[in-house]
Amino acid sequence: MKEQTENIQQKRLAALYEVSSQLGSSLDLSEVLNQVMDAIIKLTDAERGYIVLYDEVTGDLNTAVARNVAQEKIEGQSMQVSRTVIERSVATGKGIVTNNAQEDNRFANQTSVVGFRLRSIMCAPLRVRDRILGAVYVDNKFFSSVFDTDDLDLLITFTNQAAIAIQNARLFTRTDQALNRHLGEITLFQRIDQQLNKHLDLDRVLRLALDWAISLTKAESGSIGLFEETEEEHDRVLRLLVLTDEETAAVRPVIPADHPILSRVLAEEKSIVIVDVTPEQSIDGTPAASQLVVPIRQEGEIIGLITLESQQSVSLEDDIPFLERLADRASVAINNSRLYERIQAANKAKSDFISVVTHELRLPMTSIRGYADLMHSGMAGPLNEQQQQFVEVIRRNLKRMSDLVRDLGDINRIESGRMKFESKSFGIRETVEEVADNLKEAIAGRNQTLSVEISQALPHVFADPTRISQVLTNLLSNANKYTPDDGHILIKVSEETDFMLVSVIDDGLGISEADQEKLFTQFFRAESSQVREQQGWGLGLSIVKKMVEAQGGEIEFESAIGEGSRFTFTIPLAKA
Ligand code: ADP
Image (cartoon, protein in one colour):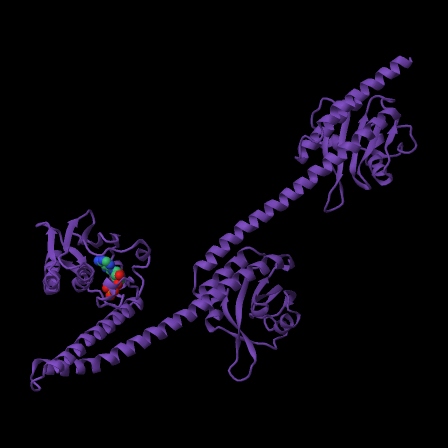
């Protein structure tokens, strides 16, 4: 007899060891619950088994898994178990075993016990430290005396371990969900940031922010307003710049700072939710069952408000955290677009200033040139050698000045989009010949040789011939200036699929690698004395690049110091 008991005891321990060792192998809640359930059936030889868990939100006790002896899932009717037994177990935190529930006066009157003719019942709480997660319940309908106190001890030992595994899986699932939510939010805000920062137009940015706010909250309408200083006093008013209601938006309504809701937000300096708002009370005139007002801040100061309305009886309270984060994003985008507006205004002021200056300089320069030319020609009387030299200096410097005025004017016109390109279809050969002819003297002056490589039958290009001539003149003039005496210059024109390639190649000074990076920036000139002894302002290449690109072409170069340079630009071909 003693041997038999020991045998049973050993078998039980072995079973406990086996099932316990499997616990903790997974962090998936439903997998863990299934493991625990299977193990309990195996340990207790019960006919049916259940795990009930407290719902973490509602606090209700719900069946999480249920099994019968065949390890099948139980559904429907047979889900009815003795709630009384379970409730008592979780309330007392103690295990319960009864060998004939029909006769046990603790349960005999219970409908489920009677109704389902339950006999053997065992129940143990799932407990982690002093917290009860729920309970494990097993029963047997047909036989009494199936379970004894040893069985209950075994069940309790096992459920103590099982509770930890369940708790871990729950925590993991929760962390996992929180992490996923977090990740989802990050991706969403990344998209919002991307869109908001893509646009620098203030109205556009605000419209986007409002659209996001409405589509991602429970609100159906809303508005965004920014504060403005009033002209008279140092008072502030809120100007609504975007509204769901387009008609009202067109008026850009102004809300005085003493508006009750507005002054409350300003006083409390935080988001507020107001319920049952009439049109008169509402910040943007839209009545609402629930209105949410969230401040937009910049450097701690409230610069505007996002107002959202819902006509449903849902409160917009839950949307506050999201909307506050959106408001922070919008604030950055608003700042960017305001800065951009200011830069644009500054640029316009600069451009207007250059326009006026270049225009005003032209007149006196023409007059100086006129008189200097007159004196130079001898029409104003003969000049001695020194006077002749002085007049030369005047004319040379005047040329420098007028080059600068011309270049500044060009840059200004291109940058402000005011440069006109009168594009048409024309033959590049004539332009090349004309430019080469114009610079003939300068090239001969340095005893350089100029060759032109251009095939006979070339299709027409489509661009402004004057501008292309200006580009080519600049490049050829550079080749002339930055190639020592006796050097070689080559203009090469060839046809590609959609464009014409024009190269100006010289075997002159070349450009160092460090200088190459700055080549197209305004006022850049190489430091070398050979470069500095040539006249120039460092504006030519930046104009050339802008002109080429404005006409649908590209420019690039290759150069090595001391070996020469090759500048190549493209011009689109005229379509047949
Ligand atoms: P500028 O000729 O008035 O100085 P550019 O913008 O045309 O202005 O050229 C800028 C600088 O690039 C020149 O000062 C010179 O240092 C360098 N550069 C341009 N073209 C050449 C060239 N063909 N060979 C060597 N250096 C050149």
